[in-house]
Image 1 (spheres, rainbow, N blue to C red):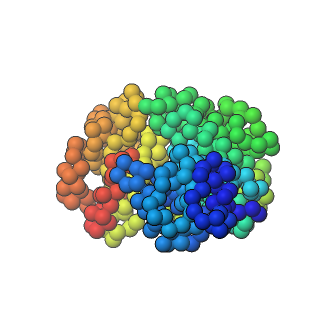
Image 2: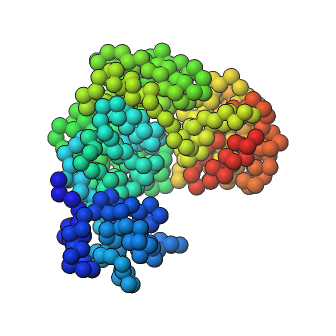
Image 3: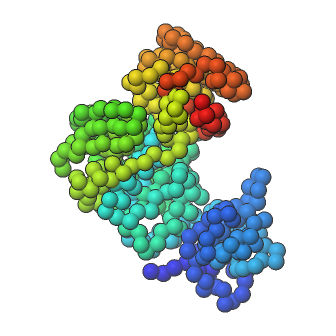
Amino acid sequence: MELLTPQIISEVTGGKYVGDEADRERIIRGAVRDDREVAPGNLFVCIPGARVDGHSFANRAFESGAACCLAQQEIPDAKGPYVIVESTLESIQAIGRYYRSLFSIPIIGISGSVGKTTTKEMTAAVLESKYNVLKTPENLNNELGVSLTLLSLDETHDAAVVEMGISDFGEMSRLADMVKPDICILTKIGYSHLETLGDLKGVLKAKSEVFSYMRPGSTAILNGDDDLLNGYDPGMRKITFGSEPHNDYCAKEIQTISTNNVKFDIISQSGRIETTISSYGSHLVMAALAAAAAGHSLGLTNEEIANGLSSYVPIDGRAKVTDTGHIVLIDDCYNANPNSMMSALTSLSPLPYRRVAILGDMLDLGDLSEQLHHGIGVFAAECGVDLLLCSGIKAAFIYEGYLSAGGSEAQYHPEKSDLIAAISNTIEKGDAVLVKASHGMNFDELLPLLSGM
């Protein structure tokens, strides 16, 4: 296959090549934005930021083996070739779009308001039972992250699973124009980024931009329990998944064996797949259904799908369960919206311990924020949460909602420092403790204290 070179990058971006003529045809493999992650042959992308300017680290990248830099200003005393463009962010997208066009392997795009990363990990685990799969690292699902993921493709990959996250109209179009997925999974249309998207119909409109960039013969795998998605026509083959029997893929005999095992059967036209996932949470079932649908679409057998699902391992911050010897700690604090909060509380509900929920603000919910936070408090009470600890401006409404619905014990702490102090005095040996809030609340700062208990 044709590889990237500084010359090709200058042609694709319309940028100006700077460097020795002999270096125009250097082979470039992969791209990074952090000079500490440079591997020999990488393209180093100089991203200017409010606090750190990537241009300052260009020569360190060359010293680590970077083959070329992508820059939007001159690099003084450059130790290697670089291409100057007007915008490195826009140009890396152009490069990603071009590079993806060199591959004919199937690419699965994953989006939705909740469960994207879990579904990405689950789908990759299924496909890896048969194929060599590239997947989005962690949750690098924005325009830069998707570009860098695509540039990690090489001739050894048989398939790719790419997570696509958005917060405004038009973003999905830019992502999908790069990814051009052959299969797209939409996990749910939920209450996220309402400050920019308005309402659920706005969320659907923004997410569904992806379908305009999919080739004829592509497949949409949609959550059929979601009313908006169930009734949506993507203009291509549509497969639905969910808990309701009308879906093409549904789950039966769901059993939460422990905090480390969920057992259920996947039912589809391809038969019954007995499934055991060594992890925690009701959200795993929906992710597994979507992954199974993608697996069948790419020719996997029931046995291969079952083997892939059994190999799934959760990543940090995504309902990761740890027995500290004192408590059962459920780290689900990477991000939060009303749908993921409800899913986390549902998963906490059946556990045979004193159930403690440490909850913080859900951000970017617009005019519905107070109402939605109040509703989470009500839901926590209905799920039988025994102790609720809240912190954050909007979390006050979670606290109020919990008490209004008859919740048994609750504390509200406007400041996180007060919450930290309260944790030491209120958490007891044998508790199951859920930690969840939007990423901007930095609730991961609570984990060392809880882990050390």
